[in-house]
Length: 394
Ligand code: CTP
Image (cartoon, rainbow, N blue to C red; front, side, top):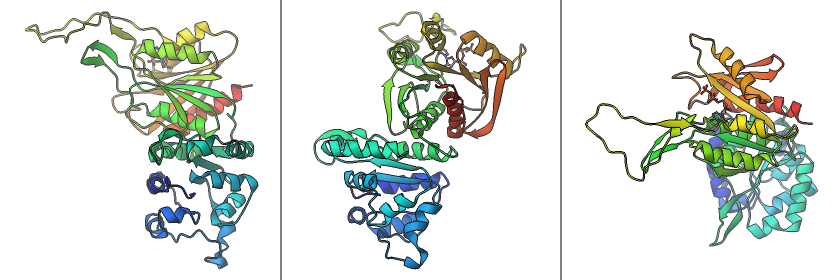
């Protein structure tokens, strides 16, 4: 952790990473300890904490910590730390750790907008990215003083998404760098009257996990965000779209320049035929008639309007089996009908898939080829989906 005011948020980041089941060694810079002291980090991590490589020299910590880590997360990464790291300086325990790490390194910069946009910082970030370091763009918003702009450390839960995604991919590399990935996630809310809507049970977790996985592989990611009840991963550009029509408009606009569109959103197939200005009132009748009309099928429209091979289009098929076929048979029919390049088929039910952290799926890869992904975390499933996507990107 570098020495910026955002160090106060790093305590919560630590908690979130521990909650993922990780054992965390905290390595602050000397200036970071000016903001939050070693006692806090020791108590929270349950380990001794120092900024100096002259402490516990017999354990050779300046080499051992980096060598043994599965992932190095730098949050916050200050302009000074980015500069030192890009030049390979090694004058404290953290910069030594960065030089000896064999594992992926993820940096979350946080600084004033002027510093983030300065040519020196831009060059240092570019150097680090060229070397395979994942440098996640900061959030925009209120900074330390009264000013605001890009430079805020993302919220701890947003950082935790990226850490979780990075840990879920063996031999993580920046293999999606230079690609623009669009993900739709969450449910839709089709308005019935000024106070009511028709929604569905989608939590948005699978879409968020896909977005986090794409960020962890260096992609530029835009999320078409429907109705969700989970936080959005760090480094993701968000466009909010609550109805099928809004999702279609966003997807069409983004399709012009996107390399990949992954439709994980649970989109209502119908909406109310008319939208009254006044509330629908309760009547004495025991039933209520609602006239619903078809919504556009976003994925099928993108397939129909695609020119050439891009963007690669990935659909989801959340299915239950019924008298006419198994869930997988229904998914295969849907894959055929929608005409997308890949389809992620997964069984759903009253207690399956919705709102959970895990999912199971069969990837339909075209030409009758399938790949089974047994029950696993939504981020790991996302990484497997992206493995298949990367193979198809030329
Ligand atoms: N989808 C879409 N537009 C819609 C409905 C669905 O783009 N109006 C997309 C979903 O994002 C998903 C895929 O199509 O990628 C399959 O969605 P699903 O709800 O499983 O299928 P439907 O096409 O709605 O068919 P059905 O509800 O009859 O199973």
